[in-house]
Image (cartoon, rainbow, N blue to C red; front, side, top):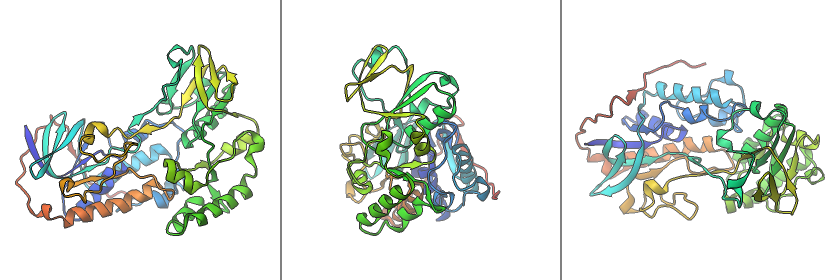
Length: 401
């Protein structure tokens, strides 16, 4: 059965909700398709100690501020509650339990193939997330490793690792958070395996979030922000190579441009590294039964490995045949191509000034393009669609604090 939806948004995460809210404020009624069963579900499945690395006032979505009572650095579970409140506040239509299997062009419209039938749409916004699919490198010997292995997306808390030797693989924010969490939770020994030396940036300097510096310098030449970061690192952290952490080979801006990598935002990472509570080691080369061989020729014998090795966008199955993805699987179109008009991507950038802040800016841009599109004036009558009761019009709630 084919139904009609003028504006269809794929994904009920922050990006999808932000676009939907701005469209609603402009008088439109977008449909959001979500494979999960709850708004903010992915935020509830993350590790317990996770907090936003962006300040509360830079992390709100358009049209509703995050409550002040949640503090400067909002816990992931609280942010999930905020997303639910956001959907209620803006009365967003979310159809839960709907898996989108593909998007194709058909005549002058888009065809969205879902697990509950086909939807024809004038505009499609893909907002499935920057970290949709967990990625673990195909290390040699991994299938014969006698210890346990999990991706960081499966890690919740350190309880099961108390008294055990754990290797955390990765040099990003998740790896740093998990390494510290394991130390706090009583792991017998913790290593963190680093392939690319990270830029470690203090979360605040003199009480001012470093994100504020990134926002303030975004329009300036990259060397300005790099110079401020270097000064802050020297002032707050000193020389971390004395504690086994390799010195970064690139500046913050160069590393970001080359590999889309943002700095590690320090909370307790540097303090515990300096105290020797965990050890930085070389990149993983291969697994040999109960041992992990490192790139420098040394080896360690962990009981468990947590792979904080990143994610893939997973867009190939949705739009892989449309020619809109680059070699890394990131979208490279903003629907300016006439053959792709009406197709938008939200939430696939990760700027140094903060992803959540960027979402609001980008949501307004997408909404403006949709409203100004000539296609939007040629609305068709909608057919009701039976999605087995999966659609819920999230009720209005004006509660704020």
